[in-house]
Every structure is written in C-alpha cells, then in structure tokens.
Image (cartoon, rainbow, N blue to C red; front, side, top):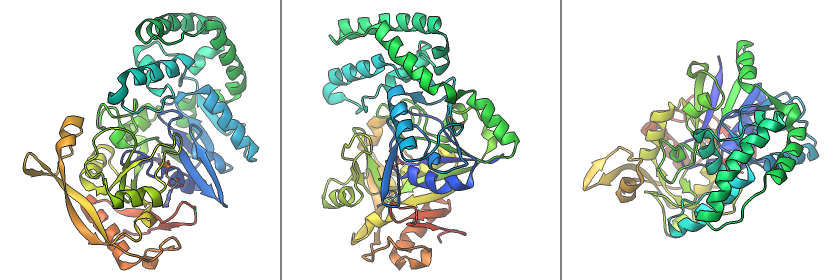
Length: 429
Ligand code: GDP
C-alpha cells in the first residue's frame, strides 16, 4: 500500500514543490492534505516558473491524478485562478483534478475577520497571510463551516450562510468596527464557483481507497512545515492545521498503515516567515547572504524570510513526530561561498545542555544554540549530478547531517531546476 508523504521538516518553504514535481512522474496520484492557498509551491523548468497554491504540483505531469483532500480549506477565487493558469499553460485538468466534497470553503467573511483580528493584535500579530485560512479552520472545528458539498443545495447553503453571517457580521461590526457582508452577494459568487468546480468534486477518500486497492502509488503533499503544526509547532506562531505526517491520514482519509515512506524536505539552512522563536536565526551578514542568495522572500506574500543555521535539535524533533525514512536536502548551493558553516547540535537551557526541542514558544525563545562548525566550499555546485561531483566539504556537510539525524540522505538539490538534483542510491555517507 504505497503512500509516500512529503513533509516540510522545518518552518515551511523548504522546497517541497520541486521534490513533489520530481517524484510525480513515478506516481499515479498526488494528493494535497492540509492548508490553503497560503502555501506557495514553486516549480521551475525550461526557464519558466510557476507558483501553485492549492492544486498539487503533480498537475504538470500527464497521467497523474491530483487530489485536493478534505483537510484542505479552499479559496474559490484562488482555485479558479489557478485552474485557469494551468489550462492556459496547455495542461489539462479535466478528469485529472479531484476536489473533496468534504473540504471546507473559505468564505469572504473569513478573510475580513482575519484582517480585523490581525490589525487589532498589531505588535502581537502572529503573521497570518490574510487569506482567511485560520478563521475557516476555526469554523470547521466549531462545526459552523461551509463545505464544498453544501454548494449542491441552495436552500441548505442559504440557511448555513445566514446563520454564520449573523454571527460574523456582529463580530465585524461590534468588536472590530469593520464593514459587514451580505448573504445574497456571497450566494451569487459561490453559485458561480459551484458551476465551475462541479465536474471536479467527488468523494476523494473513496477514490484514494480504490486507487490503493488497485496498487496505485500515492504521493501525499503537505503545505508549510512540521514546526508550524498547530499541535507540534511553536504555538501560537503556527498554522491552523497539521502539516505533520498524521495530517496526511486525517486530511485524506487514508490509514496510517498505508504510508510506507516519509520524505523529509530539509533546507540546508533554516528559514522562518513572520514572528515566533527561531534559535539559530542569524541577524548578521551571513543571514543577509542566505536571504539574498536563497531568494528567501515568500512565494505568496513576498515577505522576507528570517534566515539562520541548520538546527538539528529541531530536525530530530520533527523526525520523531513524522518518522522520516529519508531526507531530501535542498538549497545546498545557497551555502556556497560561506567560509564556515555552523550546525546547531544542542541547546543551552537554563545553563544546561539539552537535546530536547521545547516546542512552546516561551521556552524556545530562551534557548541558546550550541554549534559545531564545518569548513565551507567555494566551488559552484549547481552543475553537480552525483555526490562525487560535489566538493569534499559539501559532502562532509551532508554526511554530518545524515550522522546527526540517523536518517539517510536520498536526494540533494543544488538549484531550483529539475535537472539540478542529485539522487543518492545508497546513503550520502
Ligand atoms: P515549498 O513551499 O516548500 O515548495 O518551497 P517554496 O517553493 O516556497 O520555496 C522554495 C524556493 O526555493 C523556490 O523558489 C524554489 O524554486 C527554490 N528552490 C528549490 N530547491 C532549490 C535549490 O536546491 N536551490 C535553490 N537555489 N533554490 C531552490
């Protein structure tokens, strides 16, 4: 029962899109299991760059069926735009894109409420992307959400919407002094949306069960990273869903026993968007170099990402939660030219050395990273196609990651293009 789960092992933006794109030709189904249109997966080939927010990156490969699972929250506007772009590039979506009837919809009031909350929080903002994803998940768990299936029956839709809007409008007006919304305008917009997505909507869980029963291979694709998981991340600076491997099961309806491979996407250094503790952050020239060379600006928001050294304490923690079976190290090329590289191997907490990752934000804020240093390299590695093409010090860096993690490195990415990839048959060491 071959399901492979691709996990962002850090705070997101690890380069999952490229790895999913690389693996897609060898699978039958690519299924997205959580998050919304806040994720930006960048795929580059033949000098073209595409950023996908909702549709799984496998859509660029004929013969691959792409699933948007029940765990995803769907912004109709973003989805329609994305489908139009994919079509305009000459790729078919009919029969290849399936949308779960149980997925929740992002409604206009989710965006408005999120903007109002974020504005009111001001300095204490958790740095949301303003796309209404958090409030949509809040409604999902409050059992007041509107799902794709609700679009089928206009009366049901109107009733649910009216009930929800009554509460949301009161909140907007009375608490935040923001503009309210009108039921009819929303119905009109979502009825149009329903007409367009109708051919794609299905019971995706049943589809996946059938696919697995037929021996088909499934790649489960998350968004963001494990350190942003609502339970296991640095709460409250987290996303509102489960990017961790467990999220693949609940966000698609597949059994844990169907997963036999969990690939960790590990950026060769660390980045984080928005607020929240970040022990290995570099507030210096090296950090600026990583940001500039690595183009560390959000694919969706354009926000500059905070940059820092690789944090093995955090990675071991995410490995323990996800059960990584292999590592894919990305953006190794960005480290080229740095004289010395640091890897954080433990923390000092209250004067004591600790290898434990305290995921609560208050404690993590106080830890001091303890580093081990490795020599850097100056050679351009973007043309490397095998480990032996890499300079010795780049190989040593990979070997050390592998040793510290106790998980083999099976893929190394040395540039954004598909061709700039090293696949490792054995281990890097
Ligand atoms: P994702 O959300 O995890 O898919 O990550 P993003 O797509 O937001 O960010 C990854 C960025 O790094 C994209 O612009 C990719 O094209 C780029 N990228 C991926 N792998 C590499 C790599 O090995 N080297 C460099 N320089 N860029 C890479």
